[in-house]
Length: 138
Image (cartoon, rainbow, N blue to C red; front, side):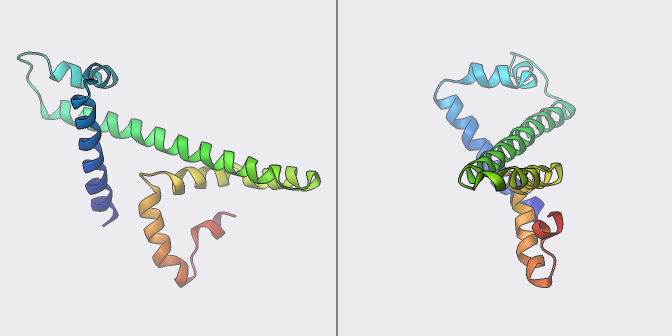
């Protein structure tokens, strides 16, 4: 079910973003960012199913890398902000625990827009049954 929810959401979001770029005249940026799309828009070019599949994989992969990167950066910034309000003797231990590689990986996955939503839905069901993902990582 999460696969369908993600695709329904991302499909509308992608169409909306592309439509906004086209209507605002930013097609050059769109064609530069997705080279396969530039080849497809050439006069008389034949679009093959493999080309569409490659373009989808590339665009989704780029969105996933950006999404997880932003999620991790936001988590790190939040933890440094929280640490700045703590007594100096507690900051280092707090940051060591909060910026542990396992916690960073969990933050990247659980807070990203692509993977986090399905995991959040799973956690809503699983947490009352005794399995909380966040507690398991800590």
